[in-house]
Length: 281
Image (cartoon, rainbow, N blue to C red; front, side, top):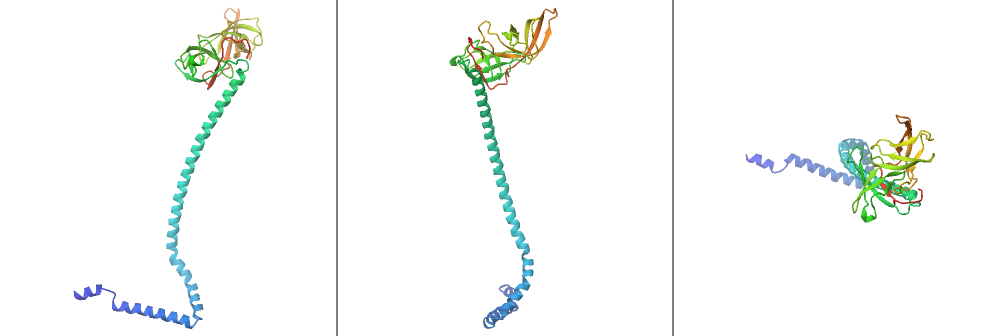
């Protein structure tokens, strides 16, 4: 029992002799190098021969260090990539907003250029489609009586007549579209100088110009404009284009189908004109 405890207190006598031998040999080698410089070449030769062994034995440690470095670099690259992707998405969002603003600016310039010269009393409004009814959807604008809007005023876009103001609140107004079955517009065939009435025929359907004499020179592709009769609408606002000519059952008149030129509910901005204007647009 006592012997086993004493053995656990430190290295054995044999081990101590071995360390002493290493220590003495080290001192001998240091002294030999100081006294015989030629031994330095022998040391370098031995070191050169043992270098491949050292590299081989240290390869696992170097591989592990490189693996840790590569893992950290990969994580940094992934984080940087994620950050760059977020920046790209942010920039794309800003670009989309810029494109939308640029488009709206172009639409406004087009509207004002077309109507401001001949109709100085114009009011630009933003359109808000509200589909209440499939046959006659209603649209609203963000201008009302506080902005000088009143019932009966014509509403146009860059391509032609959209409709007229039907009802007004202080800050908004409702527009009855050209295609509404309740709409009847005094019109004229621009090329033939022939007047008539254009009727709404339902949303998505062509307009109908009734009671056109069969002797009239009407052709597909002719433009139909407002005639100005009745004083409600200015003359020469473009209504649409003739797409079909057909005779009535008694063959006394033509019924002319007209496709609207305006974009109707597919607008961002529209212009509200004064009712009575003598100049054409």
